[in-house]
Length: 455
Image (cartoon, rainbow, N blue to C red):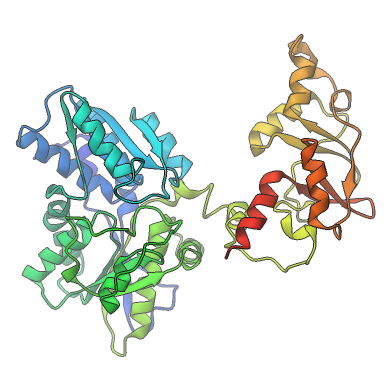
């Protein structure tokens, strides 16, 4: 269907570029820039395909409601199409999705229902089961169901496959894909099985997903957990024809995220978390070859959606994915360390308005007040509120007028147990080494540290 002059007409026909600055062994590795689609991901293709198929088959009426379970990018593709075509959209989303995606979805008008990401199919809070239940309860609605909708793999069979084949000038040996719903593997597998059966389909799977063990060892495993978004499964979706995958690699979260960062630093391409998984698997495949091959994989979505997560060093530290030299004391619990310049601070003479703005900018609820390298107070949002609630003009008052000056510090070599009385008083722990400020420890910092001990 022609949509000339319309944003939906910009979906697909994405560029194919070669990665020149990574070690690809004897092979040439190309990436298809699906982050160039309107909402920044490959899922725009299936969002459009599934809605237009529903329209052709009279499964959705004007003004109706689309309902879907999604880890994010399919939701964005559907939100774009729904907004352009005048449909309502309800999305059921696991709670590990990047905040940027949720904000993007809501800006497009989607009704987002957040649910648990730590439960499997059959649990009442499992995202796909909730979406199916909502569809049965909502008049004039259509459950899109990317996991079983045949228009999902058809989008890749009809558009993505032919584009790659043409862009490679019919010289291609392998395609590396991920599986979320299975549409990419199945659609491309069907296309190349028909047009170029010598092309090998390779699966990039997050470590913890059940798919790599099935393909490589015919092993049924209990699903684990992973931080990469959009790919990996705890079941085999109806749309997923695993027979197309001749090889599979299990890629850890750490390898995925560091590979995505390397693609950005060395190739200038800002990809998302699943991009790191796919490129990491493609690099492994390329380096294992003994003869030159031409390999294609995908920049599945834009890294703009993950700036607060995998491209944020503090988030990486909190997840235990970015290592620092261990001190063997309380310093190991401090994520933002003063000597590294990563702590937002205040001076006593600054105004409460400046303090409020800094809290908002750095998304924190308390800030240390410094004179030189010594902490002379702590200002939290309650202190600011109590100062200004009766008279907003008091935002002009100095920080020293509202801060808590009774600062109790704790030495870096103090036992963890000494943090508990501080937290019991609803205070933040100020760590100081011979009077010099080192950093703050909050309750969540201690919880993160203890969680990481689980491995």
